[in-house]
Length: 271
Image (cartoon, rainbow, N blue to C red; front, top):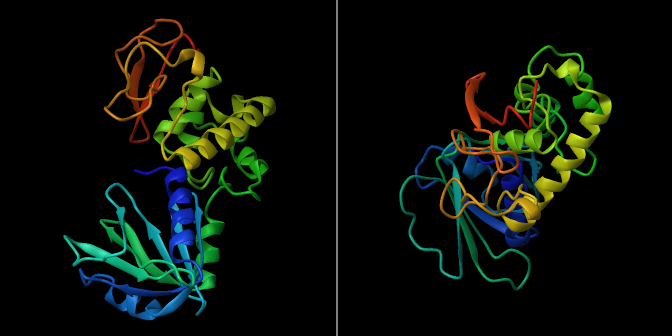
């Protein structure tokens, strides 16, 4: 599932491509036909992301909410927008700002694609924890839940009601970078540890937005064993179960925590 930096990058791209212009919205697949008709021909005022949620704000006051889930993906086109291919849930076509080239975006396979009003958007965002990529995010909100909880910190970081936008890769890697076992109870964390985790997440996820990919291995450690998949940056522990830790040589371990794969080094992350 795409992590928060992907949605923030999409929001920036959609703002640049469509913001300030009339957008023709349709649903070639048909599953979003009613919602598309509600915003078709309106001006896209703002695109933004909250955690793993993408929000398109139109001048009518209506908002298109997209959650990509496991399989959702946007494909972009510039100049010529051809016939839709495959199951396109939502198609956006617009000239963007005055004088810009015609642009298009096709959405396939999302978990959610729906129209909301301001009240529904407020209810959605109220359920989410602070997003490290939003300027007004308050890490104290997350800390108040974490330091009172007996749940493992590895589970708390993935709980979108505690912290919005963090997924499995950032969870595994930021805990490794700070030597924190994912099995430690949240209430065992010190305030200083949380402050360092939050600051690191902010920096790592901003790099993800700028570069369009997750980069977590420090330069001095970026050598040796290849990445877990072609075209992916190296990681310390994510998807490296059974391999040697880049720092100490201990075998990286794997387990399942609350239904999600968990990776860690028992030597570098004692507990």
